Amino acid sequence: LSPKDVTVVFVLGGPGAGKGTQCAKLVEQHGFTHLSAGDLLRAEQDRPGSQFGDLIRDYIKNGLIVPMEVTVKLLENAMTEALAKKGSKEGRFLIDGFPRKLDQAYKFEDTVCPAKLVLFFDCPEKVMEERLLERGKTSGRADDNAESIRKRFRTFIETSMPVVDYYERQGKVVKVEAVTSPDNVFAETQKRLRERLG
Ligand code: UP5
Ligand code: MG
Figure 1 (cartoon, helix red, strand yellow):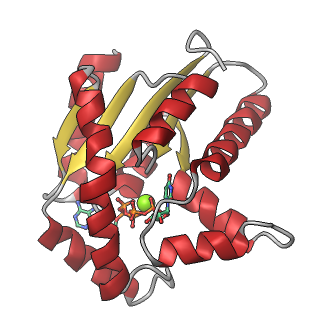
Figure 2 (tube, rainbow, N blue to C red):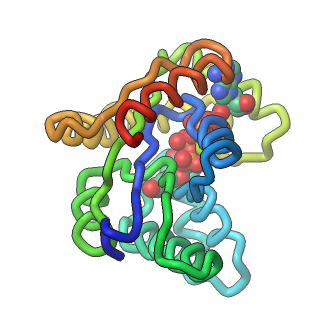
């Protein structure tokens, strides 16, 4: 895939920062294609006959990063599929929750496509924890429990924040505070993206 044909925006932020919520709004109003790495992994985990089901289940429950080959391939397939469906090579993609480890960032930019921007939702752990525990009452997600949440936070700080710092040094990060209401966060997101994407 070539950056001439596709625009890739990575959407990062801690667990529960609101990446999925904001991506849904961006799709509705700006026609992006939204691909959540976590959603793709959960779908692959549940796909009958998948050779990666048990591995993915184990990594997600422990808040660890699934080996990048699996995730990059799932994303690449989903992008190709979305482009085919639209019947053109043009596409604007929000890649949500990826890359969350430096090796993934290098691999994706090398073999799939460099990112134009990184949208980073910044939110205190306390707020994210409350949101996830609340969602855990009904989400059925195997990682929305106190113990998994603690592990997800640790991985975020130790492994995923260096990715944000890496893109920060390239001047690609658009940072948005994600503590207020979803509509407020969205208004700020739109404003900041307009400044950068036109
Ligand atoms: N909510 C959202 N915004 C709110 C707001 N402004 N005010 C009040 N409430 C708000 O939101 C979470 C909850 O908060 C919801 O109930 C929402 O209504 C509310 P959501 O939009 O879902 O936040 P999001 O940031 O998307 O949270 P998510 O739980 O999806 O984050 P994670 O990053 O933890 O999950 P993800 O699915 O990306 O990854 C899960 C696991 O997959 C990882 O831990 C890892 O094990 C694995 N993974 C990989 O191995 N590799 C990858 O590349 C990606 C994932
Ligand atoms: Mg999400």
